[in-house]
Length: 465
Image (cartoon, rainbow, N blue to C red; front, side, top):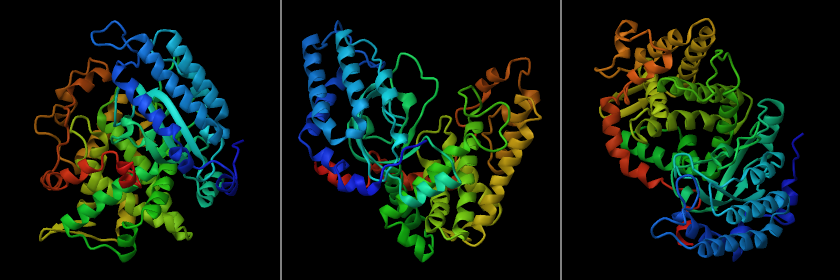
């Protein structure tokens, strides 16, 4: 069973994230980590024989600084005692073995945040890791975070949306790999000698998601002249409210990857598929969260109405115009949602203003969810390639493929003697380009989206620190 700590005990007794970042050992730890990071190769090792490389003694001195800081901070976090002891052992072994490819499996196995989900409970996390949508090298990163686990969310997880591995989290401070667009802390990003049999937790930074959502949505609303319901206008000014919407959205989204009428070819297994398949899977999980939010709103959960607007706004206004256009499956999902709502007259771009039928939006959004669910349900009876084409047909019903697309010409244009995974090579990097509407919106929002890099609920405080 998951151990639940009392939030009252957390605040009244000892650990708070603020106490950790205010301790002199925290900036010392950050400084030592930032000294080590530039010396590391992509795999996390340090080549001491390379030109301009530091001496072994210089690296070891910085590692000892890290260890000393961890040991100073550890008493503030007694719930992490086993992890911090394993972390120190892993750091010393890495130094003793000559700074080769790091192996932090022992400390990874000792770190079990999902066993103690209590609102506000802090963690000091240090691993050699890459940060998704951030730094792709397995450098050392240090993060002080706190759990976001209010009572109402804990009750929903316990009674309706079982997701024992999910951790809603928020930043307090971090090293350079998180001064990026990364909003997750996943165990599979950590350097280990072998993957554990199963991962036992996964964290999503709802504060970054909420802050990013607020900034981009406010800019989109102003740019497009959208008339907002008063309660949603108020939502965009309230960081705490948006965080609660995102942690609920994330919890339901995360569990949906393993729920529903999934084909025998499961989407959660890493494999080679056309990127629209990943786009549909991510959109299915978001729209499932939307559908559940409609039900929860009817039951009186105020956070549920916020989830609906967060899904629609983030999907329509941020996802399509964020990142490059190479296999941008999240962007594709956002384009599809907008096009579907437009085709069904829920959104209209008229007189240089975007009009949204707020009353019909939930019903039509749920309708798209139903079409994707039917695709999945029917997929169990199809060969893989036939299923991919069925998914392509669904997407291309609402989005125009690239005029040079081979896939758009149908099966006769492909060499069907090749295995399906080889036919992925015929997918264009940008198989479904942006519409004229989104090309214009991308130019308008480019600076705003760039400004959200590294954003948190208290970015100004971090910048001044």
